[in-house]
Amino acid sequence: MKDIIVVFNGMLRDAIELKISDIHFEINKERSEIVFRSHKVFIKKYTNLDVEAIYKHLKFIAHFDLTSIQAQTGTFTWIVNEKEYYLRFAAMESYEHKTGVIRILNIHEVLSIDDIISCSKVSQNILSLLKNEAGIVLFVGKTGSGKSTSLFHCLNALEHRHVYTIENPIERYHRKWIQIESKQIEGTLTQLLRHDPDIIMIGEIRTKSEIEVLIRAGLSGHFVVSTMHAGSIKQSLRRMQDLGVSLYDIEEIVCGVVFQSLIRKDTGEVIVDYEIAQRRDIQKIIKDLSNKTTL
Image 1 (cartoon, rainbow, N blue to C red):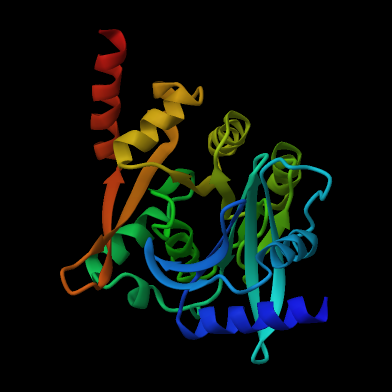
Image 2: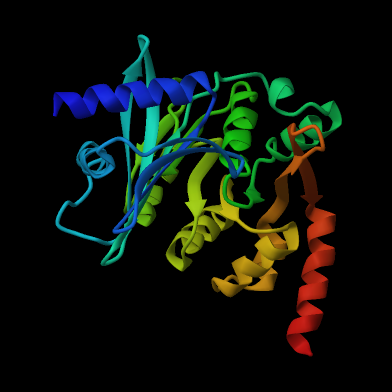
C-alpha cells in the first residue's frame, strides 16, 4: 500500500509540474498504461508501473462501490508539495477492459476573469448575462473544452451575490459559496429555494431528471446557471428539446448560452474561442427549430 501511495504521489507531482490536468488509465489483456494528455495530445506514458494496483486504490479513495462494475465518478483530495489538490476520478469497466481518468480540478490557480478570457468585450458580455435576476444561462462545449472552469471563474468575478451550488460531486471548492453535494438534486433544490439565493449553480446537466430540476428552478423566478455537453449553441437547445423541454419553455427562460471551444494554432498554442447567444439570438434559433419540428 505504501509503495502505491509513493508511486501515485510521484506521478501526480509530475503531472502538476507539466501542467497536465488529465491522467488516463487503460487496462486490458494486451497492455496496462497510464498516459498524460493535454488537449488530446499525448505528453507522457507510464508502462512500468503496477497500473491495476493504482487503479484499484483510486477506486477505494474515490469512495466507489467496489462490488459494482458500473461507470462511477468520485472525488478526493491529495496533498502535493504542501498544497491541497482536488481530484475527480471517473472509471468504466467491461469484461476485459478498464479505463479511468483523473482530472486535477485546481491545477491552475483561481485567476481573474481577464486572465481566463483575454477579450474584454467577451468577458463583459458574459458577466452581463450572469447579472440577470431570473432565468437560465448555460455554459456549453465539448468534453474538455473548459466550460466548468470558465463558469467557475466568471461566477468568482461577481461581487455581493449569494451563490449556492448543487453538485454531484463537488468539483472545485469556493470559500464564499454554499456548495451542496447531492445525488437527490430535486429534494435539495426544494430546501435551497428557501434560502433566497441570488444564483443557483447546478452541476453538469446530463439526464432528463436533471434538466427537469433546471427548468423548475428557472420557472421559480430564480437565476440558474449550469453546464452541458454540446457541439454548438444550436445543439445545446436541441438537446434540451430532446430531453423533454418544450421550445416554449426554452424561449421563455433561457436568457443566454455561452459556447466555448479549443482552437489549436499552427504554433501548437491552444486558445479558447467563445460564442455568446443572448435572448434575441436564442429566439431566432428556437424559430428555426420550431419550423423544422412542424415540417
